[in-house]
Image 1: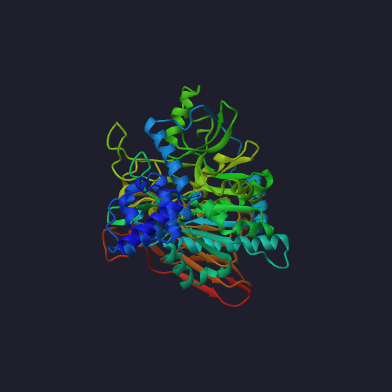
Image 2 (image 1 turned 90 degrees about the vertical axis):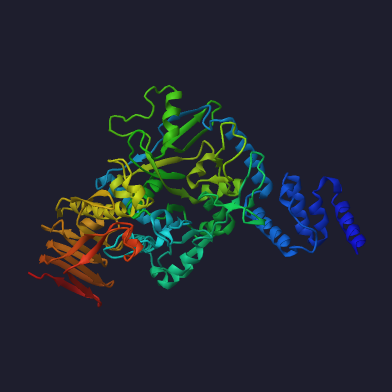
Length: 626
């Protein structure tokens, strides 16, 4: 029997033109167990210098199923990466060699300020771009990059399930879907379409979030969206690397498993390309793809104007940005021009931008200009891409994005790692491979209107130096109230100034708790049209507008008011409404008897007294208590 096995192994090796002495003996001894496609994978691994993966393999008959399972994982890793594992290992060796040498990726490049549009909320220019963006939104698809859990925030669920604000309890995913549906409706009304276009919505998930994202959607009837307009694309992980030779690392807990880690949100491009959705969208007449991340409750206040900029300026790539102070810890959008003539507009991390400027004839480095801000706007990782040129580029690259590696070395010799590393890529690095003819620009929106990400837990946020953004659940929620208050102020409402309070060790401005459904007010012009006369809202007030046609006319609010309406119900709200209201009550984030989603922000709404009115029937109504 042993002789027959040896003969079959010899035959296999001969058919592959392989000398048995070139292969690890443990693999040769088990070769007869493997299918031809598994043998091909084994050959690929040996050719790539990965023979160490088989060193521990016992003789045939011992753990044979685990050996076959190993190749199932290898096949998956090979098919999920553009160009397969051979490309992954090749790229890794090049990047690891550059990292060991300390090679600067910006050598030969000179930075300059790129072309872009700086918007000022509420002026005629802003209103023009907002209207153009709403019209254009029926020709857009939205892509949410949502592969993360909320553990970093002190929350055990998926991040998109966190409430964006706790006045209504609306979670991030619901807010995003309702915003897209509101754009869908408004765009259809503006274009007088007889059959409204459905805006596609893609969510990139991961092993950690996929099932829970699907459950959140299904248990909430997709928050009003048609299930057919939502597509979930699951991101896979990539192999870990144990040394500078890019030897694949085995899982420390399973010798038949290659250790894997996330590849980064840049995978969204290859997933979209391989899904076939881009061609479906093009054939349906779509023109734009908007990418956004998972916990910014303000983002859709900036989307209409930004999309309008893309449409009117004909940008192939439009990066949403905010004003940034020089040396602020946020990447700057920069034009880089190489001595060989190449040029690109990309995000340069803040700790690389200052030395790059100093090294290229700017002795002050990253300095504020006459506006009081750096001329290099702050990147907030939201992109708008024109679909045609996007498909053209991905057809060349397969969706592969320029990668980087960040090994943690044991010592200055850089010969060994503290722990395994892997290649990573970022969504916003897409422009790195574009030709010089590509029209790449940016849109700067006021920070208070566009950017309040939730990414720090209470302990980390409390350590943030005074004056810097907390980027916590506490600050994220308060930023929504601030933005809504300031928008109403601009529309002519007298909104009382905020008071400062400390929650979870963070001092924040507490404005009136004003919220509205996206369908009530998508654009400044629309909001302004729904406010008239002398309206005022006190600082201790709560206002929730849950319907499209709610008009505020000479309203004086000092307390809590919530209005719910169905489509077709038009409600005029005015007069003086006063009650004990809802209080913002401080809580201890260490008190485990309180739900996590409240503890992460350090406060909860205590509903003492309020007026809530619901209009379930179409028609015209008036609410004017006194």
